[in-house]
Amino acid sequence: MKKLVSTFLVAAVLGVMIPALSVTANAQTRNYRTSTRSSQVYKRPNIYKRHRNIFNMAIGTGAGAILGGLIGGKRGTGYGALAGAGSSALYTYKINPKKRYNRYYR
Image (cartoon, rainbow, N blue to C red; front, side, top):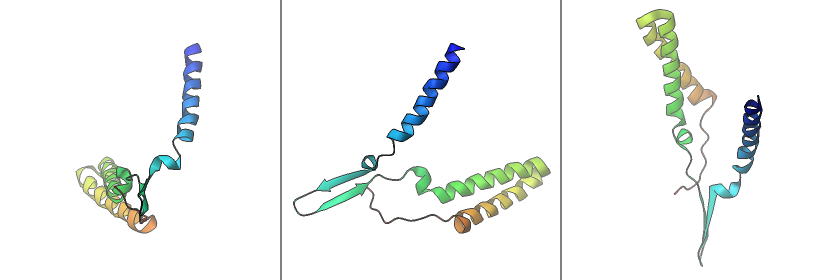
């Protein structure tokens, strides 16, 4: 019982402290100054943010193929993949499009 309580306490403390310490804006930017000009360089986005459309399409197609295979067998896998690809394309490109920011990355 003591191990369970102490494990829960440690997890709770980490769950609160890690997000609180990792959201500083200074960790995401770098300032460079020379005698003539200054510039600010942002951290490169993670792989999901860079390739969000591809990930969403692949996940939707795979989920549709799995559901179609469970419902309709081999033929259902193809139909499910097409339905999943169509619905994920609708979500990715029309319902929740990617927002572009004009930032210069190194």
